[in-house]
Length: 382
Image 1 (cartoon, one colour):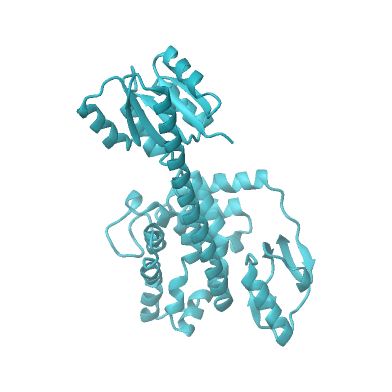
Image 2: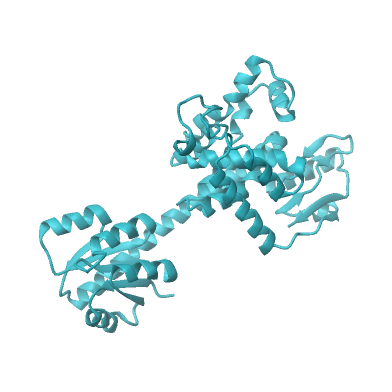
């Protein structure tokens, strides 16, 4: 597939000349001015490279490329102008993070070589981003599967949160929605530092004395401190830290932040964490969100509305997967448990709601050899 290039100029004959020279090497779109370029970016993007003239009526090249940098940071930006003064160049570089600055008229060979370099830069940037996301997500997914074998209640619930949190983040236009998926599945890591008896009380909603409540409130802080040890997960740590903070400023941590000053990631986790807890009470996803909307001092209503749109779209787009009764030998990665899996002695091995991963399958096979597993299993998906 040819790299996609957007050429922006306010002169039609210049765009035609570029197209004649570059056609065949790249997939080209042209835009007559900055405003038209915005429409192309929205309708035809993403682009590997955008090349923009500096002097254009309305939105000039500096303004357009600054917008492109903010909205599409992976797109490589090149400035072409007949005005070669140092001040123009510096403004363009500072505001639009320009990859190359070329003067008009530009030699066709130089323009082609510059575009080749820009495409290579785009490939490097997107490859690094993909490596970061895929490697981190894969490693953390494996880690949480293992942790869910140690603490199936906490981490099984955290797994259930991840898909919804990432969907809300995407709906609300977060640049890196995958961050919320990771934040969700790591949100309970702090509970591993809590004494087992207290952890059980927290998970079952039992009465906590003042010291135990204080420890429970500090679980997100503990988790955030642990997560900060992983490079590039600062945003994840901040989301986890604020997941128990109400929008009116109450809750944890006890600082002065409230409303929009609370990180969006924390406001999203606040919603999905309580949603998973309340869903069993109301049964219906939309009814659960509607009930949560009445608590205007707890939750960000914009987050709840975005969540409602996600749930409605999921209901409209995805047919409900039927429940299945299967044997252990039929259990596959991706199955979702509709009932917990127990040993023949009644020990809960994997709780309801868990998305089955490789670690769960291995754990269940080991328990089946030693203690036996109650069958059939009730699942969906897969």
